[in-house]
Length: 469
Image (cartoon, rainbow, N blue to C red; front, top):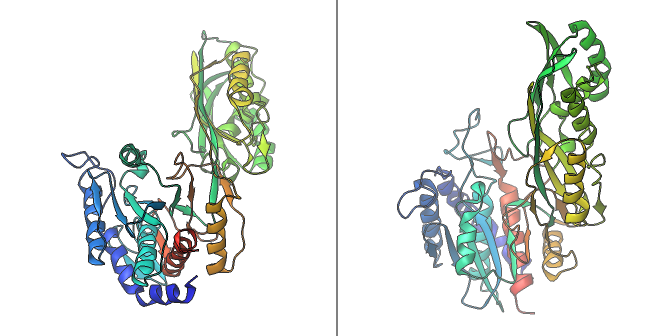
């Protein structure tokens, strides 16, 4: 399968690869205000233009789709494989220590810069895989196209635009996630609920509860204001909960009431068990307090019964569904606001591929109504699934094992990737679980060894899928 030749080519051209990645990393390509002919602003358009220059420098042609995406083809044969990556980035943010976000450097075997891991480094690794196959004159029976988008971080309208003009290839891989292969991306639903009620003065009572700021993020902080109990009463109830949950509660007087602050840890809603939800924690504390028998207090107790602390899998909601391939449905309670006359909340469900409208969405709606809450329109989205025994998944696993020596199984995730909804598409590298690339954070990097190795894996996969049998 030309392993030695590919390995030698990538190693001989590694400095060129790093310089090409650096060209892209110097461009701030976060989404900006649209301009004429530049739907996502100057930065993303400049990144696309620079990538075209890189293609042309090595004898590849390119096509620009109105500054939404660019493409380059490995050959003129009928296309069998699309490689889908993106050149836009999230905002640089603060607290960078190794270098400035758009001043890339290689230090201690790591290439630093915003986009090094997501997704400019992987995009160039995929291009060098194509370059290796082309310059080594490895015979292919089918075509390969690299598609580079510029709006993945803000909704993927770029790739929607492209697919309105072009059908997807029979197979698509995206180097915008993790190795070995992500073949299942769970579906799910995003929901909200609310209700109103008359203010009641009976004590002890809840004056307000607030937790969470962003949908799909586990809240690390939450607070409540309780009237009619002393600090000592609430501290006594909080102590065993702190020991049981690992949350930190701060109890302090505020006027005639008591303020409760809960501190936990954040996580993405697709993996709620990796965080410690301060919102569900503060509700756990409130519901053990001797509150008056009022509508508002009872509504809060009902919400806590449906979304209790550490119920990551929707057992209390009645949607704890799982299957052997995608695993368990997960649920996170992300946002909640309550005052003396109304409340509202948002939750996120990443559903097993065994989940259906009947056993998930309709169940959730029913139990919320039974609790006296008005559910909003549930926004459902389907899973993305490519069978593990498909030609594509098996070939990619074989390439990964061939180059790395690691024999692993395809994985399912609760989040979505660039290929979610693209028929026959899977995510394929270039990150690995054991390395934290600081993706979306300060000091984002990709190890140079991983970039080189990924280019070899992608080249091997191209030959395995499209080469002469």
